[in-house]
Structure formats: C-alpha cells, structure tokens
Length: 150
Image (cartoon, rainbow, N blue to C red; front, side, top):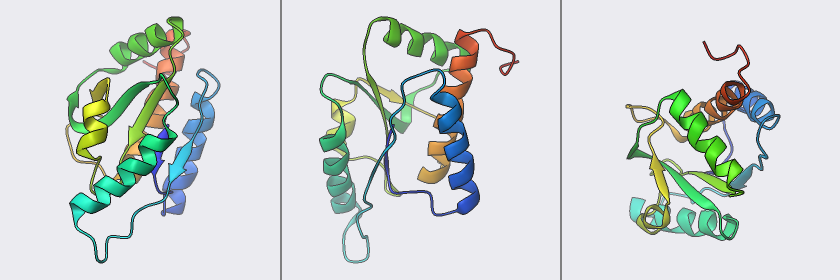
C-alpha cells in the first residue's frame, strides 16, 4: 500500500495502523509513505505531478497497480475479496496507491491496471487509507470464511 503522507490525526493513525496490522495477517502488506508536496506556492497540478513521481518510484516492478480514485470501478466487499484472492493465486503483487489532498497524477492514473473507487463520496486521503486497510482486512476474513464479514 503506497500513500502520500502520514495520517495527521492521531485517532485515524491508530485506527489505520490497527487495520493494516489485521490485514497483514491475511495478505503480504508493505506500507510505503511518500512525502507530501508543499502546496503553499505550487499549483494542484504540480503537487499531483511531484507526489505522483514519488509514488511511481516506489511501485514494485511488475506489480498490478490499483489507483484509488473517485472515478474508478466499484466493487462490493465480496467481489473485492474474490479479485484480490485471484491476484494472489496468480502470484501477482498488488500495489494499492492513494494520492494526497489533490489526488493522483494523470500519468499514474494512466499506468493503473485498475482504478478503484473506495466510496461514492470524496474521501480525505487519510480516511481513504483507513477504508482501504479495513477492506483488505475484511477481504481476508471473507476468503477464509471467518465471521467478521456478515
């Protein structure tokens, strides 16, 4: 999981870490955080470009790139878990990418194998990371038929 910045809100950071640790019981999970681009004297396009370059540099070679993006594909939890399990059974690494406050760069979105919508609403990037971590955990419990997903 690649993300721009670290959660600033202590409660969100704690919840995100909790779900990332839970998800890591089911899936190989590496957390990569890249530095946020200061936006004080930069345009939103420049911020997306620079953050996108940092994210792209950290994507493992050959990985399936999943960009979390409001215009992406909608999957319910069961379909997401089935898709993720299929990637794992095929031996593919999956790199989930969450942009910063201005979203992801056009170049990174173009490279994406899949664009995934996490919610029908626009989410702050810190909250998007928590939602993704929880869904990765939920997907693991679905695959193993554990009672978390009802």
